Length: 316
Image (cartoon, rainbow, N blue to C red; front, side, top):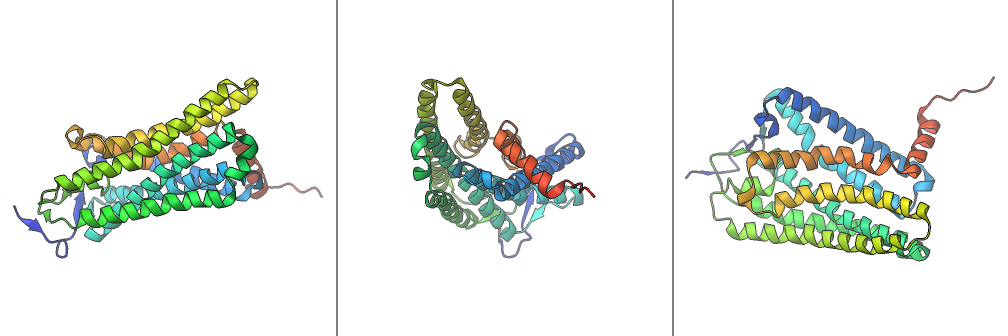
């Protein structure tokens, strides 16, 4: 088996879902629409949370961070995939592949941890409302965000360096939407079994432990909600929690399939569909899920649009 020297080669060839689709033009148009929706909805939600002082509370601070991560995550992958398809040029350099993997792992890992912190925020708000601003004071919120970013950064850096140190075979076709660990390891001309075990352990740690914390938080929330005397209070709590649980289900379902399930259960086509889901579909839907049933966000959106974007009619 011939090895490929990364310092001499031109890079990898990304054979993503657009290349395997029966209707690539239609899929390309759909992805473009979803990407524009992700940019618009996440950007608008970030703007509203930043500008409207009524949303300057921990819940929306964390939601703003989620929108930022979604916006960056989809932008790491989607534009290149679309441009490559339109130009019929699917290559990515060795350094570009490493950078894309590092950014995707950092943003995905940070979002994973942030979703757990958001569940804790809902737990404190519903189960300990009188102490909410004590437990979720600004320093705690910033510590949560910093922890998510730093842990994800360190994990991504280690995995990127170790994955890219392997010698790769002359066959450089990655049958995937982006540079990720599982499809790249299939190209390695070396024994990767121990490292695959490490990836599995890291996946369990980064996914199942935060997910366990989320489940525990919502179990306690459910107990509190069931004992609420007011139906209005119950409904408001359930609406807020259902939005977060929907986002959690989409994110953790896709990530668990990619990084926790054994490689024997994977196929390139399934992996492509899953990667498309968490890099394009989820970032487009998340702000809509959080906003459409949230009266505070919709009210803030109307105020911001009315103040900054809609024309004002002055009386003369």
